[in-house]
Image (cartoon, rainbow, N blue to C red; front, side, top):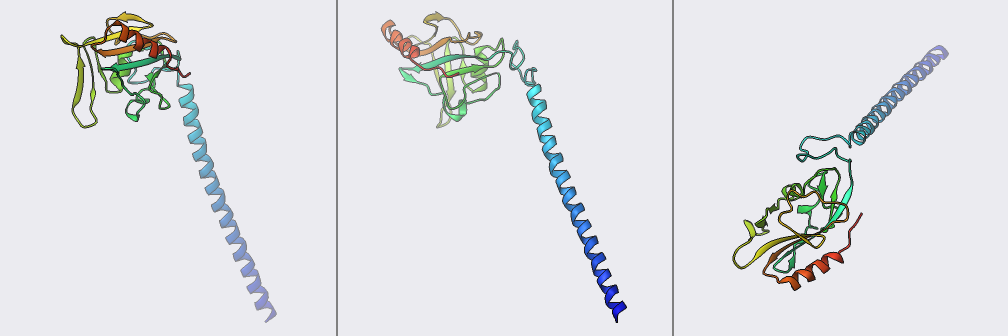
Length: 202
């Protein structure tokens, strides 16, 4: 009787020890998998950070490496006197090279040398050339504001009129006005004053 009882206790002890070993191995394996996953994620993030200054696929023509510059300009677009709002999600951070961000619709961020303004408008779905400003309307279709006998599309950079913005690479601190309508010079001056008082985020 005593031998049988002792044997049963030993078997239970061995079974318990085996179970504990299995559980420890299982927890160790889970921990290894979790830490491996974390290491992979951290590795990817480090790689992306170190590769930030490399030109990536889809880079604008003639642009320098991403991160080669970080400058800002402020933009005001007036259509028949109304301000066009670039702060909506449709116009925010559509490309790493040049964009609006943080729901700010007036400050343009450029993160590489040589990125022309046309790239910004192309990536946010705004049609812009020396004659027309166009965009998709919320109700569908496209709205176009083109120079005609009555109204004109005008561009100003730091109060100076320019023929076109699309091939321009702005400098840090530039103030850019796009104006469409039949404004006289006094009204244009008012728009330029509004542009001058517009804050520029960093």
